[in-house]
Each structure stands twice: as structure tokens, then as C-alpha cells.
Image 1 (cartoon, rainbow, N blue to C red):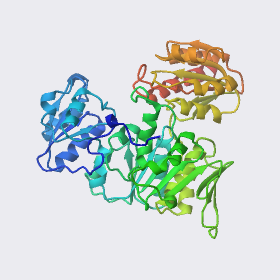
Image 2: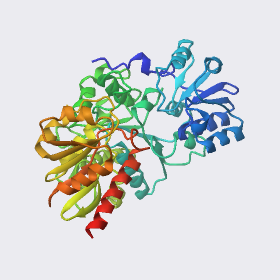
Image 3: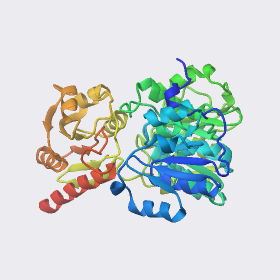
Image 4: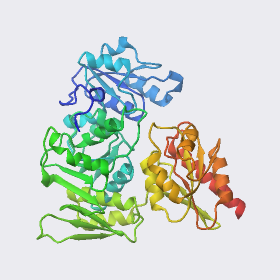
Amino acid sequence: MNFEKPAKNVAVSSLRQVVIGVDEHVIVVGLGKSGLSAAKFCLQLGARVSVSDAAPYAKLDQERCQELKKIGVHLESGGHSRKLFDTADLVLVSPGVPLDSEVLIAVRSKGVPVVGEMSLASNYLKTPMLAVTGTNGKTTVTTLLGDIFRSCGKKVFVGGNIGTPLTDYLAGAQDMDAVILEISSFQLDTAGNLKPEVAVLLNISQDHLDRYESFQEYALSKYSIFQNQQGTDVSIINADDFEAQKYIENKTSLRHGWEERSVLFYGRSGAFQKGAVLQDKKVKLVFADTSREEELVDLSTTRLRESPNLENSGAAILAAVSMGCDLDGIKKGLASFNPLPHRLTFVDEIDGVTYIDDSKATNVGAVQSALESIQGEVLLIAGGRDKGGDYSPLKKEVKRKVKALFLIGEAKDKMAESFSGLTQIELFDSLQGAVRKAHKIAAPGDTVLLSPACASFDMFESYAARGRCFADCVGEMARREG
């Protein structure tokens, strides 16, 4: 396997630092939260800045539009004109912007760098960085690490793909002990010389195949979090994840080689010399140095004791130790952590039936993990906007555990065909209808699980809105039963 990423997904500047010169013209593509932050940061460096967004002006966030006007940044809306982009010295793209648009291809052909905000870290970030990626669990692990660092008395910035854009931190005093970033595959595609002191790869399963040409291309994007690391840096990898292990098998093809002393693993197999072994509801830290005693972290009294949060905890513990956090502080952070909303979140129990909101499960791997973690029979509500993936990896769990499958959204027909003959399947035009039918046929001991395996944007503005709708429906039924 060749681990060089395909040219179409690599910024021209990916092998050198990005430096923004005074009076250079920087075009920021996309007026989201990260786009506005990037525009302000470039302006602070003395660049001339324009923002270009494909959406019509009326559909843009008007507060952001007014803020751009106030600080003197030109805004182009309703498309990306060649006239504007022909004047660019640097193009800074927001994560959701496709890199194969005609205007960006034309810009790259002229040698103009097309990068994302993560590429700015190599030249402008002065604080040690811990970066987390993976198909599933990265928001939980990133947030958990923030709590752990604070429990250890450290000042920390938590952001990237969640919360606050990195450029907000770059524009400030940079007075934290560490920067902890969740980084998506889209951000890695334009990350340039990003070199985290500690990098974590949680897992890789099919996702975003509506944007990538193949699963391999998506996987290569995830692997690239390690590509600029050197011997003094730390790489943390899930030893139980098949796709993550492919990286280890092919490590010799990487540009910077590989230093075994910098690699830590976590998983249930324990087939490694250094890392975190997951045993029941405990995490055991093991060391290659046999003179050093093994450490045990007991999670049995925390909300992280079950899969997939046990795995998330193993990754977080190793990352925190690698960044100098003490074990007592780590344990405090783990003990006080509350799992994030819409990720296997308990909603209610009605007449012995448990209702779980897993709306954040927008891909097959997340749903598979959710089904594996639930005891008893499941009435599964799934569907939404298809992301181009293959639903077949779910067939075994659906056949084994799903009592009935209720499908919604644009993907419902495709999913119904995929799971035909495995369980009872019903199609609905609304989430409310699916919840009501699940409630009607569920028996004591069953779990009604919203775990869509799809994006939300066909019916809802976000996965959070979808989860709130589910909770509202459950609440309405609880009031009726009461």
C-alpha cells in the first residue's frame, strides 16, 4: 500500500511551512465560524483578506457578514469567481469546502497554496499540541482530555473541529500549557506541515465516501496525522482496529521513517509492549521497561466503564501521560467526566423499555459500536442522508440483536434493501412516526435506539437537532404514560 496521499487531496504547500506575508492577498473560502476566525487572524498578520462563499448572501449568517464589513474584509457570495481567485497569493479553505472545485484546481495549477487552518500551526503555534483523529470517538476523547488536563492543574485550549477554531488561539496570547485539537479528515487534507507532539488515531471505518473517491483515500487522510512526526513525538494507535493496524504494517513507506520508542498502543488484545491494556472495566498501563511497575486505572465507578468509552479512556490516558499529566489528576478527570450529548445518551425508561439517543452516530462504525454495547434486544431507528458507505458491516449485529428496524430519511430505501430478510423493517416519513411505532411494539427489557448511520441534513439542521427531536418524542410518550 502506498501511503502518499492522492494529489487532488493535498495542498500545494503541504511539504513546507505556510507563512502569510504583509500585504499578501489571502482568500478565505467559506464564511463559517472557522472562516471568520481565519479571516481575522490573517488580517492581524497584515494580509489583505477576502472571503468567498458559495451560498447566496441572503443565506449567510448576517452577523458574520456585518463583522466582515466592519473590519474591512471584502465578501464575495453566491459562488467563487475566477476574477477574484486570480489575485490570490494564498487560499485558506474551510473544512467543508470540496477541494476538487474548478476554481481551486485552477489556483493550484498556478502554484498558489491551497491550505486549511491546521497548516498555520507549523509556523504560528508556539504551544505543545495534542491532536486526535479517527472516524468515531474523537469528540469524546478530545473533550475528555480537556477535563483531564484541567484536573491535573494545567491550562489547556480545546478546539479545532469542535468548539473554538485554532486561529482564535493563534491570534491570542498563546499562554496555555497545551493545545488539544480534534482534527477531521477534511482538515488533515489541507494540514500542510502539521506536526503534533502527540497524535492519536482512534479507529478508521467507512465514512464521508460521498466526498472521497474510495475508502482507501479516506483512510490515507486519517493516517496523515502521523506523517510529519519525528522520533521525539508520540503516536498512539488502537491495537484492535484493523484499518489502524495497516498503518503499522506499512510504516516503512512513510517519509520520516518510524521510531518504535515513540509508539504506544491501546486495546483488549494486549499484544504489545507499551501502552494500555483494556481489561473488564479497567485500564492497565504497561511498559517495555520491566523495572517499571504496571499502573492500573479502575473505571468501574465512572460513566466511562463500558465500550466504546472504555476504549476512548485508554487512548486519553496514554495521551495525557505522554504530555506530562500525573496519574492522580488523570483519575480525577476520568471520574468526573460526563459523556457527551447524543452519543449513547440515556433519555428515559418507560414501562421497562430504555430509550437511548445516539444521534451522533453518523456512520456504520459508530452504529456497530452502539449495538455491541447494548444488552438485550434493540429496536433500531436509523436513516438520514446517505454518506456513500456500505451498510453490510452492520448485518451481523442487525440479525443477532435488532428486533425491528425503523428507517427514515433519504437513505431509507437503500438501507431497507441492504437489511432485507434480517429483521422486521418499516419505513417512515418522520422520526416522530418511527419513535411512536417503536414505543408501541417494544417490550420490557428492550432498548429503543436512535443510531442513524447517516448524516442529518436531509431532515434536520444537525445531529443535535435530530437527537433533541427524539428526546422530545420520548418525553411526550412518557407524559402520556404518566
